[in-house]
Length: 129
Image (tube, rainbow, N blue to C red; front, top):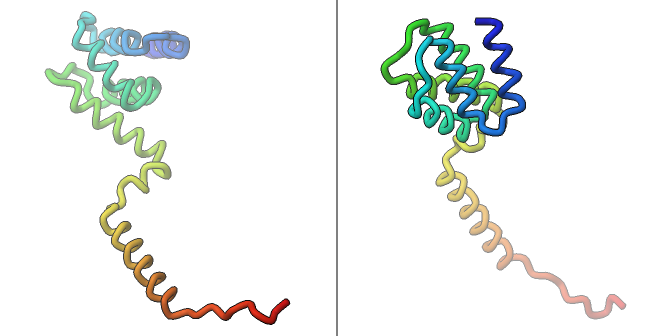
């Protein structure tokens, strides 16, 4: 397994179509034949998470599930998602906040500023020359 993982990692670094490389890597590890469904599955995952997240997720999956699953996509998707969140946690935290609450706070601040603007009287500049 170690030699094949190094071989496919090198191929993946230079590949123009990483979905095909990852599908063949996945199929070699599970000793199955590469079909169109594996290539489509890998292309979807690469588009969402990137080639190297998917590569290392496949290694995690093989380590935790030595036999092939009937529907591997949901399981592999969750591994990719977890790995991606661990790697990019700082950039994804803001996306998890509720925008409704944030917008309500901005509206309240704007109302306060408008009220204060009406109360404040700016003195004229006559006689300052």
